[in-house]
Length: 349
Image (cartoon, rainbow, N blue to C red; front, side):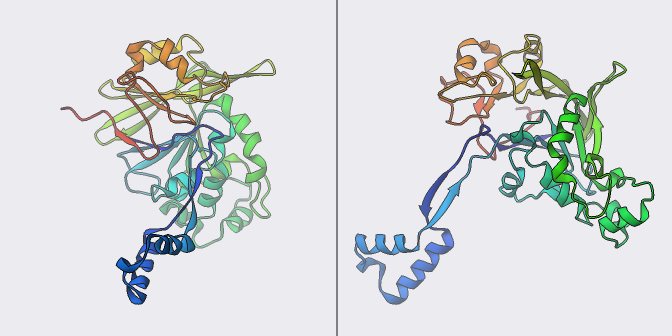
């Protein structure tokens, strides 16, 4: 299993604009100067003027926190790896672009809670996969050359949704599902002429976690000859208007017993029972606020430094920050940057 941090920043982080030249711009400038003069005869002021004249504005983004997990198993598209997004960021398409991926190369999504910086990319992946006739081989065969809206309108007499093997998976806890429907419903109600368009039109929904009958449903992902079991983990994120909004993180348990914990957005060790998950885990992806004015809905870096057990600290990869965390040397396992990836279980020395 490979986990890549697509974005590592907090919900309202913004990047910086800088003046600069691309490699291609510099190459063209050098070629031009070679034709008209020699570089050695240019004064510093003249060279600066040439560079300034051609400079452009570049944006160095800070993508909202979300992760790509890849399993060595057949994907919806037929070949390995199976790609699962853990939350969607404000708009995951931009972060995916940095990995040379698009939404139509994603097989599944896990949504922890319905805040915008975790579901903002849902409309993009839903619409781009629905209207892509080649998203899977099964979809291509099912459509048989028809446009998706025509197929749904003319042939699905009971207004059935597309078959499960033609659309991405959506893994979600039942307490998150209905708020997600309300949040994304208007943006997804956009298939021309087709009534009763809903979340199931776009996604093959898998309810995980505690069910109405008391069972706890997990999901197993193959990873080569072994497997990982994904289990939702309850954590408290926000108390608002006397109501709670939990965030359901995930525990990933390997065949060998190795455990990766991704609590997602939480308050510091609420509920206290979370501690046993932290102690069980071998690696923890830890929410880490660095704001000058703590929000109270994320563990602040000062909490993690002062109050987190040293045994747990050493397991933590920190993310979801605005300013880069300043921490004592050796206290945490590491601080994530966008694009960082790790292989689990880690190779044996």
